Length: 599
Ligand code: F6P
Image (tube, rainbow, N blue to C red; front, side, top):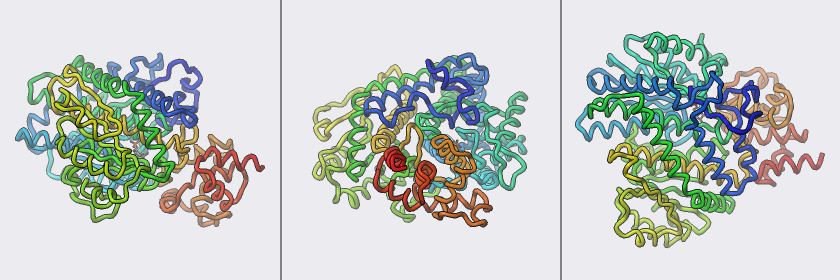
């Protein structure tokens, strides 16, 4: 198990801190006061949190294993060898990457990127991805299917029809998603075909034990069965543990660590199959070290990142917008980061949006062009030019995401168009050799955050370089979108207080947050949450007795249920009063303080 432990903070670090919570749900001491921090301090805090991914010591706690620990590295070696076998004999074989939310998006990115690479080498495309909720979930949060283990198993069964060997890699950062548990259970019952691998960031004894509807197992039971398999060298499992910078927001460290682990596994398998470079323990360690360098290089630009955080926050505060316009997969990273702000911070869909050159052709997703599904699925640069550009103003922040390998003339033309509407135009650009005319390129933008990549890092492998750029861009955008929402008061201490309560995990998380801040009992917090969800002062018997799934279906249609419940609990006010306090104060902490003053 990988473990991101905290130095110098004995109390927070101690396993007795928030003992009832799995590590992925615990709050991170580094960011305890992030809601009062300056842009520069926010970037420094997030830099430290992300650096924990690469920590080498488990501080003597045998329960936790770091990314570089020998058992984790050995597991990566084992899985990479399995990838090698499949690549060498691809007939009737498949590698399936699957997860919910960010975990599914990382699965999609890797599966499509590597299939594209295989096709370019005239090799059989052997990757497939599954995301709970289907392709819609790549761009919008579809959290309800995460609770459905049968749907998970069914989808996996369909993808694998006719295959004789399947390497299944299920990702659930919190070891919690029933959708993934259902798939692992399916694999464990069909071991003659499936080799199941579980990637997650909690020790097995912290895996979720909440009963899963319609199933005889819960996540922990499946994870324990996986453990047994590991002993018999059949099941392969990689795990780690991590406190997120914003508690529970696994889109950040969880997503980045998943990307690092998967890329390490899959690229090692590819090198072994096609370049005759055997998978070795030291080779894997070396690859992990290179990702640490990516972290250092990205975060060496603290000042520039802080400036972008500030710009984005000013735009959001002025009711303007932040737009990411990206090329190739950097554009997709932008779309993903933007879409995740809605469930994480209760952001509006228009607040931060991403666009990619060539839209769905670039996405290359299974279900094809989804643009007819509505505005959330309008993602092409052309759409930006047609629908957003005419109304763009200086209140909006526009950030271009490109690399030296993109068509820089095209980047310039679009930049000039945007400049006619706003000077608030910035770029995050990745360079290898350097541009022939850097000044001309720079002249289009107010600021350019240039990330220069030493050739020693990527060993002239374009695939590897692309993965580094993606991760680096993910880190930058996670910092910008998180930092901006923190600065406009959407985070309470380091908790995503305005989360959408759209599945059972988020329902439990919401109750915990209310307990954490009000000191009220679990029952009182649940009642307040339900009153906010159903928008009533008194719960009817039917409301109280119905199940969590029904509650989350209703919550899906309501905004700000956790802040409303928090204000009600803190001040003993009615729903209407709580709402009016929240309307009057954009900073949740201020709304709570104001109504407490009136008590
Ligand atoms: O339920 C929503 C969510 O928390 C997303 O934010 C997250 O990306 C997804 O679940 C998956 O979580 P996990 O990887 O822990 O299963």
